[in-house]
Length: 131
Image: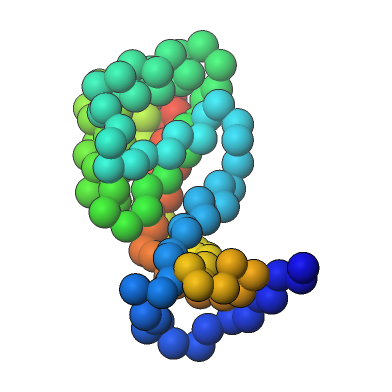
């Protein structure tokens, strides 16, 4: 029983006979000073944890947001800058991240296709300002 995988050039597929399984995007780092913001992230609790990281462990924090969470990631970064009162500076970069989806055929369980899609991303580097 071999699983056949192909790559679909088109974004279209039949939703009645196929199911999409989205793979999570690749994270640049798993260090505690890398914070990933999603649509469900509670900003207030993340601000407190980021303050703890900046005050105790690290001199810099990296904030990452994808797609619909870009605005929330920028609000989060600005809130941290405001709380530190100018002692923290930011460097903002945008990029495009490739995500992979598996399209599984409901009729033929052995047939799987992959689809690549691109999502906008923002990466904010917050660091202590030189005194």
